[in-house]
Each structure stands twice: as structure tokens, then as C-alpha cells.
Length: 477
Image 1 (spheres, rainbow, N blue to C red):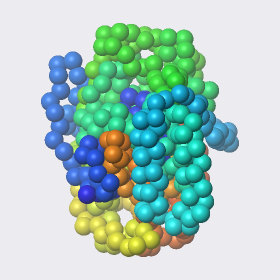
Image 2: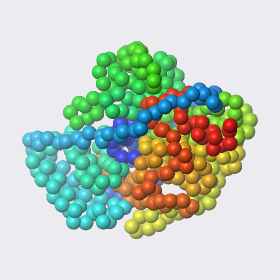
Image 3: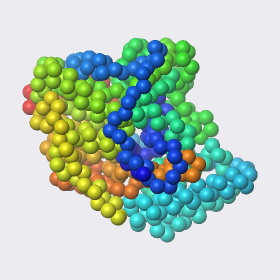
Image 4: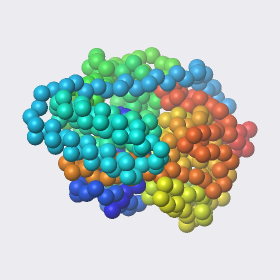
């Protein structure tokens, strides 16, 4: 069996998971064969009275709200971007018994073999890969604590240099399965957030009617501190976030909107249930919709998009769509294909591995005129993997792209179960679009038609510098 995913690699995915939604993939049956593709949607469990569910009615009401951006209004002036390299974890030698070492060596060898047999670039798995195994076996022989072992496996995978392939421990998998099906269930403040330089976090999106949303926390806000300390911290080798806690407990957040003044907000943690939301609004004075897709690693995203388009059509025909992929780190091929079906048709490209080529054929579905209205896609350096393929295919099929050069990481990851219940996600295909104007995207990234800053923590919805550029491309004055 095989499940394909185009989610970006372990470090960014880990941050997203710890920011209150675990974006992992599920199949707990140990096997060394790939995992089967996920279905495009799944049933959702009913929410408890204390939960924050996201029913269709909420999506309908959100679809019709006016965007905070007003055409002709001021936009943020953003300085050039500096992207620091993330800290590289380390593993310290620890005294363990021989049985632990032997078990770890078996897992390391199995991971090495899976990469050797399946990796997308055979040139990366020759003599150098043999030397990598020898080096990491020596580290294990010196003694590695079990809670450090998956850190070590990730360091070994990082030797491939693709910044995409990654490993999940059994604990990672258990936490992430519900989020994949849109059935998040945890206690926290209800935001998807990502760490930024300096230890703070930027809010990508709050859950509707969550404790955070009720406290006035919005997308793009910076969380500078939680109870006076950095929101993210390390406990041993594990990166944790202080926004979680026991239901009914409070946390004092120091929050700063882009360009604004920091303020302290006391938030009472609650139980959050339901899928990660998309964000939808209509540009005032127009029939142009803005839709933000923050991931494809949630099997409800395509259904939410369809529901939003239907709600928008109920208020009148759309003249265009701005699809925001700037924070979209990828996800499942089934979700990618389902979303593409709303906008394009036919053969749009091929997935290629060392052993085979398979087409990406799209059967069109028209909702609210989606096959015909013009589209502008927003892109940035946080856009990765299937988020890039979604953007690039739409561009190749006629959409315009606004933003900054994307990551350039369009491999497909296939999941392989390890004997202890962990999982290795290994890049074994790349993608080439049928009508792409440049590429390969793995080397070039997605190149915007027009440049606009994309750093999420330096603008608000009202001051988004990409929106006037997008509106101009859609023919708005």
C-alpha cells in the first residue's frame, strides 16, 4: 500500500504540528511497503459541547464577509527578507543497554535500505550514502537514548540534502492522524502558528470562534511571549509550545499586530475540534473572492473550498479569484487533484521516478464558474511541495502568480512504515508540468509573474501588498 504526500519536510511540519495542529499521516500497520493514497474526504466526528466545531454554516458565513483590504488603500512597506537557517539539533552519547543499541541499529539499517531502494535521485545513494550509514552506525554504537533516536534518524535523512524527506516517530504519527482527517481534538488557544526568528510565533490563522479569535487575535499577529517566556522552547530534544495546556487554564500572551504596539491578552484555553479552516472574503466593491489555503495536508480542505465557492455564487457571479498559497506547505495528492479539478482539465503534467512515469490527469468540475473566471495565485518562500505544484500548474494553465520565488521542492513523498511503528517519508518522484514556461521547478521554484513581498508577519489583511497587484492583473483599476 502507498500514501503519497507532498508536505514540506520535517522541521517546518514539526513547527506546524506543535503550533496546535499535527500535520502528520496515518497508517499504524507496520510494513516496509509504501502507504496507500488517502481518500479525498472523510467523515467528521461530532463536537462535544465544549468544542469549537467548524460546521458548514460557519464556512458559509465566512465566505460572504468583506475583506479588510479596501482597493486603493495603503499597503505595508516591507524591507528585504533575511531567511536564517533553522538550528540543527544534536545528539549526545548516552549509556544504553546492548539490546537498545541492537534495536536501533536494525531500524537505522531499515531506513537506510528504504532510501537506497526508493530515493528519487539515484546519484545521491551511491558510495556517499554507504559512508553515511557507516558514520551513523558509529554514533549509535556509542549509545543513543530512545528519545534522541528519531532526531538522529532525521539527521541521517538530512544528509540527502533535499530538505523534504523526513521521519516520524510512533508518537508523531499518533498525534497527527486526527488532524489529517480534519478531526483535530486538543486543548489550546486555537491557532495555527509558525515560529519566527527570535523565538516568537506568527499566527497563520485562528480557528473560528476559538479562544484566540474571541480574544481578538488575528492572522498575521505576532505572539511575542506566553506567560512572559518564548512561545516555543526545547524540553530535551523536543520543541514544545506554551500555548497548549489544561482546559480552563489561562495563558497571558504578548501580542503585536504588524506595525502595531504590543499588548497583553489573557486567553482561557479550550478544547478545539474540527478541521483547519480556510479563509475566505470578498474584496469590497468587487465580485473578486480571496481564498487562503494554508495546507493540503487536511482531507477536508477541498470540500471547504467547494462549499465556499458555492456560498459565494449564491451572492452573485464571481469576476475572479485570488488564491493565497503563501503559507501552503503541501499535503496529499488527492487533495491537490481535487482542488485542481475546480480550475483546470486534462493532462497537466507527470510525476517521474527513476523507474516509472505517471500522468496527472484532471477531470474538470465546475463550481460557481470556477473553470472560467480568471485566477491570481499568491506565492512565497513558505510555499512548498504540492503547494508549489498547485501554484505552478495553475500558472501553466493560464493563471497569474504574484509574490516571491517559492522554495523549489516539488518531490512526492511516499510513506514507508518502520518496524517500531515509526514512518519514513522518502522523496521518490518529482513533477514536470505539461505546459510550464520554465523549470524544472525543483531547481527554479515557482517564478512569480509579478513580485510582491510575502512575509506573513509584516502585513495585515488590510495592508497586504500583494492584493493591489493581484487586482491589477484581474483588470481592476
